[in-house]
Image (cartoon, helix red, strand yellow):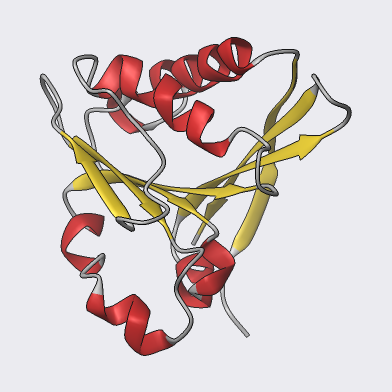
Length: 155
């Protein structure tokens, strides 16, 4: 059995637009991430397609790499955004990963020690859930509304 301890939910928000989801993420980086986004960290993003995971990453970019134009890495698998100061933001989408070999081949390990890594579809690489991380779950409650739940999992 793993030695992961659940820390209470940090926050739950209701978002009525992609812009509000981005603002929630901006606040998350400033208030919750270690060093306000200037230290490495792992953020696992959960939610069905169209829930707003990439919008959340756009909000993270506002603080970490404000000059970046973030987009979904569904086909490229990894997008890296250079920070003005601190550590870069790496946005990874594992939706197309089908095996452990596929996961190993993308070289994500190289980023985990020296970047903020935001990963969509993290369940495709179960070992990620065993690491210290923040979990952001975005639930679609209706056509325009999302529930955003932020949790902290640490060893």
